[in-house]
Length: 309
Image 1: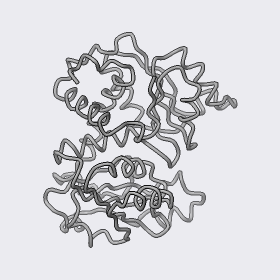
Image 2: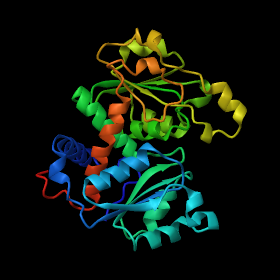
Image 3: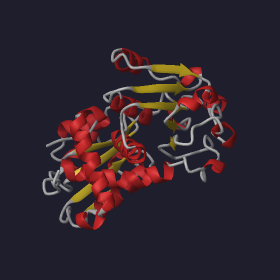
Image 4: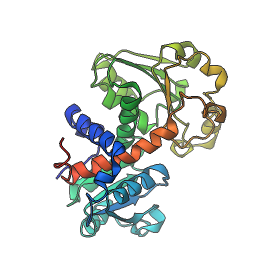
């Protein structure tokens, strides 16, 4: 039995397997419409979510399976004080696989220790978001044709942004990937990520607060919102929330073949005038997330053996 708690739980070869399967599903979804008949996915979301929860549900329904679960801690027995360990013990009797989002870092790891079914980390605090990383990877691969030899700009909240942390961890395993890390001084990447991943791996990166200066170098611009829910006080959030706003005037510095990604939800960090730019692919990115989650569910349930991969 396998779990997916961190992007590093999958080898580069396993990642390639899942991404390739996701692309095949996208091209011929009817072929996979009954793969999970008789299977149930539990969505245990202790934190609000639109895309991730509904993407998982759409993925399982598209595979012919069924879905059960809850969409907030208030609607679960967590509001009565039930532990994650006890919840997953019970859910293991109801479902075949589960996706968990939790505000506390490490909660899905605890769930995996006690679970009798595969656990997928759907986001834990400011730590990891591995299925968003799969979504990001399949988007980059489909649009650019590669996952190596890329310059990736990451802009916004790099301190609390779990999607940023997960994507860096995944991309450093590919050759010749360079990062431009664009943020206010207060929201730079965590020290452990800088020391243990980038510096330790001798990865080429720049930390800056200048978006326009580095825009011409980018293959990918990964925008993130400043997350109100990660701040301890409202004053700091208000002071930093408008630090970087991508608009048409800034895009004039970008290459024609650069792509703009965003894990969503967007607040105001990307002007709506950018939406019609062919380089803006964040809504397409959300669509790709369903296909790659379908591939992941099949893989963790051992149902991808007849796909020719």
